[in-house]
Length: 621
Image (cartoon, one colour):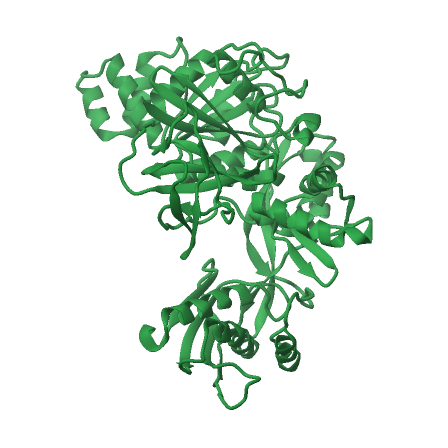
């Protein structure tokens, strides 16, 4: 049997969860058709999802058509939960992008399609809600805003029109077309090839509510998106993209197998970067039963230490994120102070299901990262319903970053006679790295100058320490080089290097100096001509940098950048400024130097910038 893992993506309220429900019903996988309004769909399982009618966590369901098992991953539509979408993208064979025939191409739809095209993920477009009043033909809009090489697939699609479009995308097919050697079968085969390459996007129309067009969509999914053979050949290699909890609170890992097989009671290694863990699989759940084979999405139980992004069986690069990490932060406090410890435990548990919220404790305060205000509301509800904790949130603030200005170096020599210090010598050089490089670590000493475990201890500590720079923000675009090493056998241990490295690193960073940068979004804005002055005034107030307005007969297009911390404020003000006619699209662009006095962030944990206090706290520990 072949397998096909498909993501269902859309702007919120386009109808993707209803479409997923209809696909399952039409395939006979469920006996009764649920509805989002009724709160009884298969994929919205959280109480909060059922009440609000939105998808918060990705859901995984399967059905069989012909000889192919199709696994659907229903992803959130709201931009605040884009991290869930990103995790799903790592395991997909293809995608269905749902667009509402009434609302048309919306802001989040464009962000999603840009990402799908950038990653080369084969994608079908399904225009939903054609049965609703106000529904319209969206093909021209889809070509203009989503995919220029989009073609409507329907019985009315002429073979000549399809063949001409295919010939435009492949030179070999073009030669056959010019020589009049192309028939319907050749067109269908070439269509599948170009869809698989992510260079052509078929558009289908229908209604998830009535079922119209859904059969054609299933056929297109099976015939045009690239499926894989289920096989147990090769070494186990799988990606964990979702963590859930069982009734007893145990972890359930959702993993896509790329090669090999996985069976109950099997002892495996799994990797987080280069760090290896081991565990025994207690149970495997896969559609159709039996062991999990390459191509399957499996529910894996028994791996207590597993996290999202881990690789099962063999290490491998996780790749760059498809979307930017959160750029906002909020402090969370329990309404009842005695629940402070329980709050931290509950948030830590939630961070295992969504690592990007990045729980951070500072004295008695706990902070989390966010994409937006809706995510804050969801966390509040999850804490109340899942842990019985009423929580309050401070106003959202911006997450800044630091970057080194110049070059700095520092060395700490071990002194075995002074027991307060550590049996380790560490020297580090810090300098600016290329834009977008994050933190890189290199050696100017021989790799064999230290045991490998000590080298790893230094490198891991460098990365964790640079989570807080001179002003308390994460340090990016920073190149760190190990320049001096020594150890004292047999007393030196990896812990000595973990304790010494922060002192040396922060001394080198202090000598190099850092600047604070703020995250900015690039935006596209379409507004009526009469609102241009008011909108430009608001953008100036929010420190946005707009480009030259492009005026049309009745509307104006604006492009520019705006600080991430002001995106929500502008989006909320836009309807009043434009009488509801403005269309605003934004996505993360880059960081730019913060104007004025750099904002500071209180530090957590031991502070290696204060040498005396740092050593004293370690000694007390």
